Image (tube, rainbow, N blue to C red; front, side, top):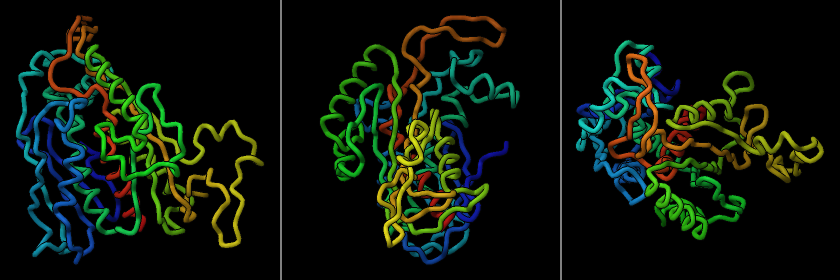
Length: 346
């Protein structure tokens, strides 16, 4: 199977399935001599792990990372960093009913048609549990570039949106609520809505906004390795992501050039930042900001039609432990993938 490696200079190769013994990865290209804060790495995993609040999957995993190589006396050696995260709370029996069935809007059908075999337990390799590996690598990457600040937050759930620009938000409030929304009044509405959706046995989508600050001028290449193209690839690699926009995004398509142009200040900064900190595929030193859209989780705790491997349409109700809304747990994943993109260009 191809496509298990992300990055060129700072590379992450991952392995493992949702209900296997463990997931894990190998980080190659990390510079030597970096003193790692292991507690900070674990904190990032704790932000992503299931069971952390009433509005996420109740699978109980400590998500404790174990480093196997590439570190000596707390510092990176420049050699590959191997790590594993044991799976501790598999309930594979929850998925036995899917052995011969394909869930709608999941990878089940295409995965089996492509490879001729699939691990139906929790989605196997295509499970979002894989993203815990990304969070480990992203947490290491952030310690290489501590001067660059990466802050992601939930900006919408369903049709509930933050109605303030990111400059008016206090990012320190993001971790004070289960939804990870720094606007507390909006966070309360979002949380109540997710709880309502969960009671209905349904799911809902949302968006995450990410802001990157203190970025130097010159990251990115002008043709195929544009900075925003690499960020887009990283975000669209995350499970359930349906869209990516940076700067003015799709709203920019409605504007005139005279409205959209970011006019210069004498020092090279710009009066506005509709470019989202990137021009011609290269960072311009302004804040980089983008938004990522997540679809509703495909597994519903209610009856719906599914396809079986004999070509029959049958009814099936979802089982197991699933998020009614994925965006609160996806915030650290968005930050991790952002860090992996930036550290590669640095």
